[in-house]
Each structure stands twice: as structure tokens, then as C-alpha cells.
Image 1 (cartoon, helix red, strand yellow):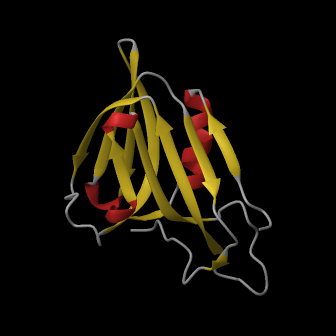
Image 2 (image 1 turned 135 degrees about the horizontal axis):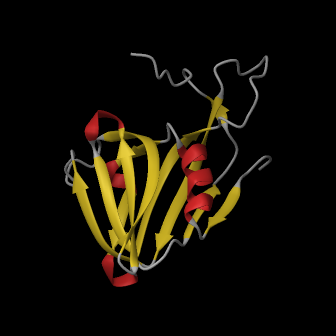
Length: 144
């Protein structure tokens, strides 16, 4: 496993870095979980490696399986998709934060208007690549 990424976020600025790296990650609804008893939200998705330069043998870029976890989560609201539609694939656009009293609201925005709003005691997130990358079918396109 070369070039695997492992990051920890404990501030809004740290989470902005993780958000940038997770932009265009595809996540199957069945591969995300809100675990209230553990006060944890997790997902496993296919991250586009924006930090990798194009190479001759992978001109469209590459993806890697990645785990994202937030701990200290005390609430979750889902919009724009049904948790029961486990095969639905969402495309992550950004992760943002906002102070809400003594807590923090963490919003995951997905293409098409879907979103997840998590309420947490603090920012405590990890991102971990889970293996080697593979050639992407295409580069994400943000043009309209």
C-alpha cells in the first residue's frame, strides 16, 4: 500500500483539508452508518485522488477506497435521499462546519441536493485510505 493517506481533524481548518481531499468521493448509502450508541458517523467510499498527478498509465486519475469517521456525534439529519435505498450512490461535494452553541454542526453536501447534518460535541474526524488505488473511469467534471 503505497501513497496511503491517514489524517486526523480536530479543528474547522483541519476538516477543510479533509473536505478538499474527499471532494468527489462516491459513497453508497449502504456504506454509511450513524451509530448513536457509539456517538459515531462513518462511511467508506471511493475517493478521487486529487493530490496525485496524472501519470501516463493513469491519465484519467485514480480512486482509492477510503474510510471517514466522526466521533462525538450526538445527532444526525439526512435529506435528499432515503437510508433504505442502500444501493444509491452519492457524490460528496464538501464538508463544512458551523458553531451551534457549545456544539458544532458538520454538514456533508452531496451532488443533487442531498445532505447530512451532524451535530457533534467537537470536531474529531479521521480519514484513512484502505488500500492501493486503481484507475478512475473518468475525471470528475464540475462544468455545467
